[in-house]
Length: 67
Image 1: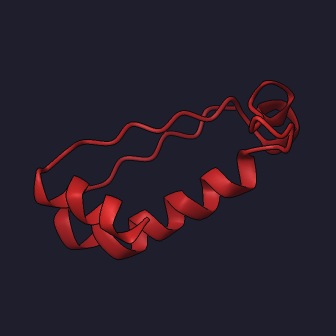
Image 2: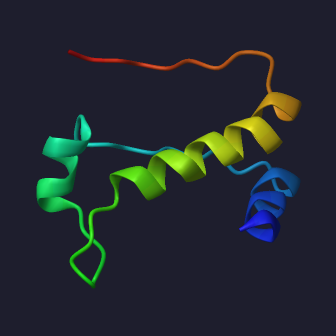
Image 3: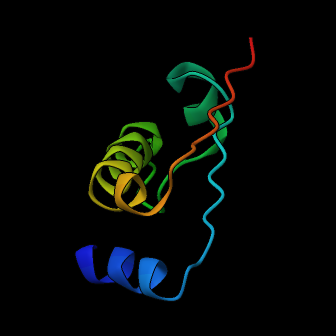
């Protein structure tokens, strides 16, 4: 995963990540092929990417939280 993040950073890709809502809603329709839910894995990867790469690259981050 680290090499993937490095590649995104090197070539200045912009990453757009979408969640369908809180875990109980998101996981209804977003599952791995195995049937396991994806929400926790997505959130872990967002945090890892943000902490290791985004903070170093950007001065302004916008986070939308819709209720």
